[in-house]
Image (cartoon, helix red, strand yellow):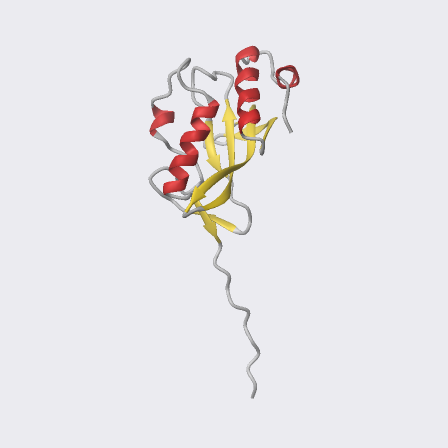
Length: 155
């Protein structure tokens, strides 16, 4: 589903740069159709929470010639685009996070692209493309190991 700039702008509180943020989200959802914008509550590490715009869904990633859908959530603070999105891998119940060079144990995505974020040069589409490349080299999730059901022994 694609979202119009107007419908996205209506979701955004007035403290956001609504025109710019709506444009970036519109372009991102046009390029990555599995991502959905919505206002939601984000909880910071210190326990405080805030309503933020998020883009969540799956990001198609090629790994070993197969395409996998990595569940992600990008949070845009009201300081976006001056500050980068807060990016997380959000595994399903069947998945577990693989801590690596670009993913912490809580699923936070840590990329040089985010650390070197420059307003006006960086955007959501290029961030998502960088995530696809990096996750294709080093996937941030894997399937949970299945434990074998215990069989009743015969006596």
